[in-house]
Image (cartoon, rainbow over all chains, first blue to last red; front, side):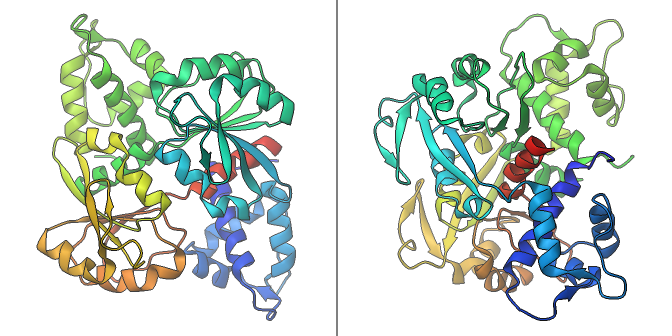
Length: 205
Length: 205
């Protein structure tokens, strides 16, 4: 299969969410114009996005809504549930724990770590914040393969040393730190400053 | 000038931040290999990013650090300060208000709005949460041109109606709502679910 662009993947979530939130029984089919309009994406782009995954439409009818929703769920890998460990129980971390929309995708933050003695032992969103020195141990015991980093850049080295020795598959990096690993770990960087900053650039551009 | 890709703009922030945090006086120059290495970006890509904005390097010496930092500051528009209004004093909103890195870029959230009577009148990060019905009025009085939306999709219509009648230039949209305006407003959508979700896709891919 051709490599699917990152932007396509993100749009698949829009299509999926739109179908999921559409609780009308009829009509059973939706055409690309309507789905495009609902998600704010041009129908030509929508059709191209979906075409990466084979033929999905029904001639003259459009897409079967339930069928498309199921397929998107499988493609995106959200037909399963995932346990996630969060490192950093600061303001951003707390917001993520309470972010309900992750759960709608089957993504559950079930472990929280921090190195701040004032935070360790406290309850955040129903979970006790653990000392980050138990990160490696906890990930291994619970077979957690996804880690979210919401910490300051200065605290990253200790975390990397521990993660290096685990079997984690992926990191969602909300810190501004650059991550270097000796092994293959999928890393997606989410930099809120660059995102808001690019808005500023566009205002002046 | 050629249209500058969004990804280039985001990387300019990495270069800028790296230079800003480098408080060593000497050497005065930095070559693309070193700056690339520090930011985790290939030097060929870094040179291409910077080439959008004319010739910046000095032959045989590399980039003059202070000069490059100043230029990037101007290009990105962060040589000024900006007042920002935040709509939504929930968990995500609260995290944004307390997010210090925005201030390092000259971006200040100075007004906070919500429609929840339990939140209105309370102090968050030093600011009193105002009733969202005063949004339009407050933006106009204070000449605020940038709005951050950190609200639920269901609450969006009232906000759009008010923003439609203001002179705002840009919206950073952290809600999952689709925004439709009759006029030209720069909108950058930041969807945390799609971002974390794309990590899941990549694990399974």
